[in-house]
Image 1: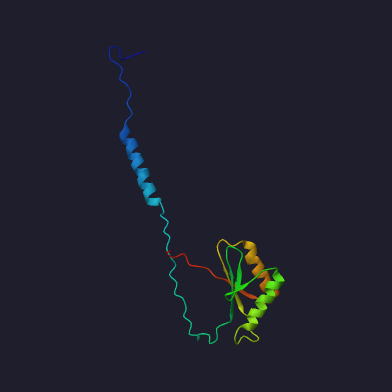
Image 2: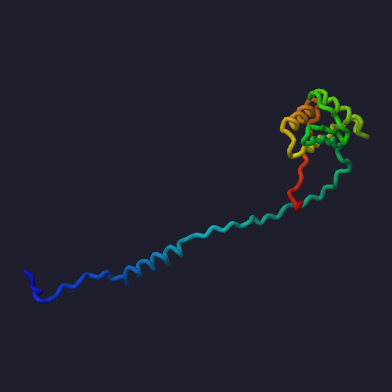
Length: 145
């Protein structure tokens, strides 16, 4: 049964206004529920120390290693044959230090950035053999060159 004889058929249209209304409500909901991460620094008040400065500076034994494999102890060139020989050279340099009787020196390793790792390990092993248990590495700050 067709009751519309003679009338032309209308094309269906999609009404976009309710669709836009729903999208705006979803957009507002997402904006309200979104959390923004803030990376804040911790506000820390560090304690102060009223201790006196140390009166005597520990004896330092500076060991330098360059990229070519040359070793120096306190600026004096030392030939490296083996680890035990280098340990003896470190002990004699520590004994030659003025006023260091009975004190264990702090071994400071100044290694060139292109020096082989094995050279640094050799100095560390020589310090262990010489019973120098205080060991540190010198580093350069990465400031303007």
